[in-house]
Length: 232
Image (cartoon, rainbow, N blue to C red; front, side, top):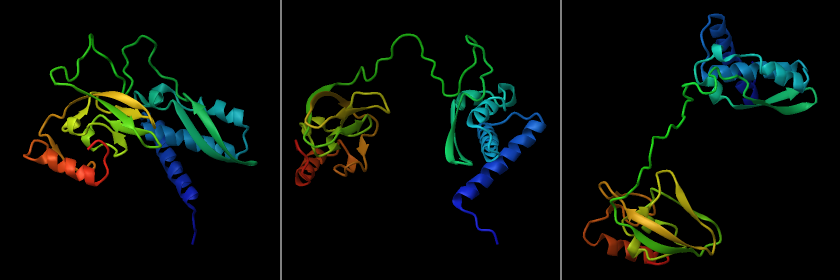
């Protein structure tokens, strides 16, 4: 019976994936991102076990694959690769930077996966929505981050502001962004109404229903006061 450690199990997975990559290369099949990573990793780890010098391993790794041997976009996806290797003197990390040179020439129309191509002009967000501006003070002892999707009424209880005025509102920021409130600092924040069905579930648990239901705001304010939310 052979007992393998988690590290040894991971090494076997890398080796098997690298073997698949080698088979595909022998059949002139372009490698996917996982196959290319596995192939590079296996070759580098094997070179380390052979006691090749660090500098020679890095030089060797940059000559293993060309852009023609991988799927389009793979070189741009592997800009950095960190590989933990076992050398004779101990464990070291081999850092590879751009191990596969991109095939596209500068100025070409090639699109990098995930590339953002902006259109002309400017896009106005929430231009037709009413805006409420309130002052918010962080009375806590650490930074508080509020994301763009958050019902501002239900933000951290250490933030002191007019919660009634923020009912049914969120910050006037693009999706995925937010505002950071440093301890003791006061910031002026622009809020816009939450659109759609205007139904809030979860978050701080102060609403759990429709924002525009009769008495919903008064009930939530009472609940917030009982739980120590400042500004309620």
